[in-house]
Image (cartoon, rainbow over all chains, first blue to last red; front, side, top):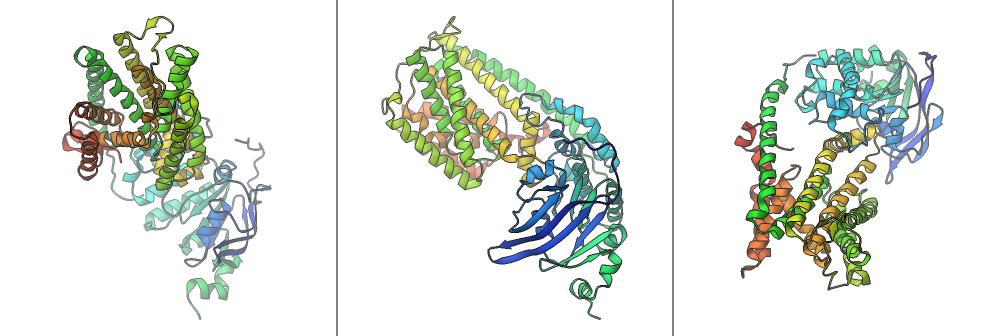
Length: 259
Length: 332
């Protein structure tokens, strides 16, 4: 882990950027010439109709898919050809559209798995499981921050859908990422849960960059500083929500209104 | 956050202690039986059983805890039995050194096979490991030092640490038992360790584990090499028990047999493979003298296992009403 600079400036500055990003799947162009700048201490939304290539962009940025074209920079380092696990270690951590918890591990264990590697407790095959107990304090803090304390020893599979997503965020935050990529963090959630998760995301974005794919436009309007609209793999519009939502092309493509 | 509070944890802790106590009682009983076994049973038979039980447990370390179905584990078992037999007989090393060489050799073979195979999954992984183990089989047929069809014969058991005469069957039995227990203890620790936790999370959700910054292929390779090394421990031990190393132990049938033992006993349980190995070895022993072909019986056993109790004997017991009542939880 690299030490954080002592003078942590929580002012917006570009930490993740993509230039001319493109991906072809055997002839089909899923993503084409996407330019993206994600800033520290800002929430950036990526929206667009189904099949617009939002998740593909996520996969490209986190190297779960190799890009066909383009360049990706993370904190002034070219990460275009870096592997997915290395990127996570560099501070760019993602979540998944389908809830990504470890179902048969408890809430505490879920968070602890994320803490194991940065703490250097991942490769010891000769130590007992109890050696992981010294990570419990930090894990419990994270669980408490996100209001999951009473579920500490519940297996993740037994949690409600909304809480699974919250657990996922807790696990992601355990890595203290510099850039957080959230793929539809509120998909399938009830209204109350949406408000809670939106609050959590706003809170964590104070000290890091967040890029999120989201369909819930009222959430986007509420908490996102910057919106990029994708359509058929290309950027249709970009700017703050007020500007983007007034763009006629966006209204036609995304909102479905043609007046 | 809305929704009903659902905390089965409190209910589990009481029953869990029950299962924990039962496990300890079971372990003590099994240990007692193993210590007393040579006075009731033919010691060579029990030693053979222990070797195969360790082999199956090592195999289960891979299949049960990482989900990789290797069809080439005979390479490590048989390879190590050649290494141990050769070094003990030709170089005159002591038995513990011979077994250690077998383990290191099997681990090296595991590293090579793992590096090639680990990137693939499911049937592709099984086929690559099968192909590589067939290559090793033909190497063993052709190369001079393995003595081809004859195998390495009349390997002396030697003196353990230069002191204890292992040609004495009782001494040998307790040596085998000790190695078996050490092997099982290593497996238990490996599975229940920080490393084992990462293996578990890879099995639960590999993509998520990658996104948390883990180079998952390295962890899988680590598990593969450990499984190979422990299979080698079983193989090296077996060559000393019987005093020979032959082609039988590197054939694909041997790879198949260990899969059968593990499935029959129960994948992903500590004791399942041991039970499975016990049943198969006993069947083979009992039927060896009869006219009825053993392969038909093992085939029938395999079919019954797949059709009737997919979790294996121990797995089904854990999942049964009685098992649940006693506080066991079936492996998912």
